[in-house]
Image (cartoon, rainbow, N blue to C red; front, side, top):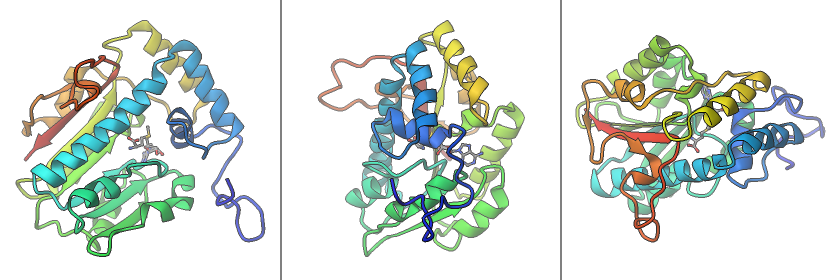
Length: 271
Ligand SMILES: C[S@@+](CC[C@H](N)C(=O)[O-])C[C@H]1O[C@@H](n2cnc3c(N)ncnc32)[C@H](O)[C@@H]1O
């Protein structure tokens, strides 16, 4: 990693390599290289309790690919607001969307300074489309909507993707208010995609992994039940197959025949 260093060779402001960061730990589980020893240590601690976390991270990313492809190729969506974008990896939202529809516009949002440093890789749009990056906390809905409006036309349907971010908003009412306010800005025909961790499948092991995570990570992590996750979609029509474990959402070959349930649930709703 070199991009996190400024021109003077010093770490850029805002990048703290002494505390683990969720985006970098997630990157570690996904097999990426944009992480520090402190992140790998925290990531390994989770793996020791919950070895399937690596499969969970990858299944969640594979859901991103399937849902964005569905939205662009089948639902005709051309605008995406990806809140909690994460560090760039393979198959970023704009790459999947623009493969299906090159004119797709994607605005990424994240509050981790390291994601901003790497945002260049999220800004490699097709010539026909556009991408932008907003460094903001998801709680700052007004800023997000105002800045996203420079790229996205909120008079036309769009998709909001909140993949893996809502567990970081522990208060149910606050999380619901963020989703509701973001989605209220969008017209009928818009979509909301969410992935969220549960303890539905692995029970106490997930709860213990989260307990250990919360002892070292600065942003506490909250598990929710499928019913609590479904509450984010109140008033929306859930697209088939509804609220399911990520690998069960419209699986594709070669996985279609051997889908394994795991503690990352997802759904896609339509206004
Ligand atoms: C588990 S990662 C998921 C990344 C990507 N969406 C994916 O599905 O692969 C969660 C991301 O949410 C970001 N995040 C957490 N809390 C946030 C907040 N309050 N505001 C904005 N981003 C946040 C983290 O920095 C991290 O990049």
